[in-house]
Image (cartoon, rainbow, N blue to C red; front, side, top):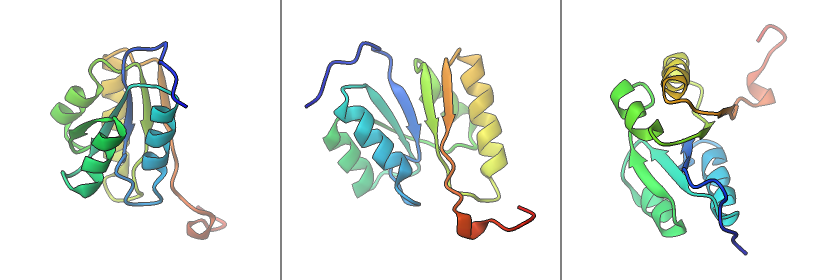
Length: 124
């Protein structure tokens, strides 16, 4: 059962297509099921992006390392669920997203880690 969102501005979910771990996709589905407006950021238009549209998400294509794309994605959002696979661009993408979120007055920024215990060591 879906309920009407009391917060009309969309919630941005990055990594919503869910290539790694499906965290972003699961969060998108959960938020939509609770009646929230969701803006799903995806890297490419494909079947996964279309499936998000069919669920009711507003799908935007963009790259987390592209500041112009991030301004477009974040504008009008008050909350963000940030997820990205660990890569060489992870720090740049995180800093870009956080800085643009601050610029637009985002109230809540949730970083969804995708690192697993098997990727950690005694020094990492």
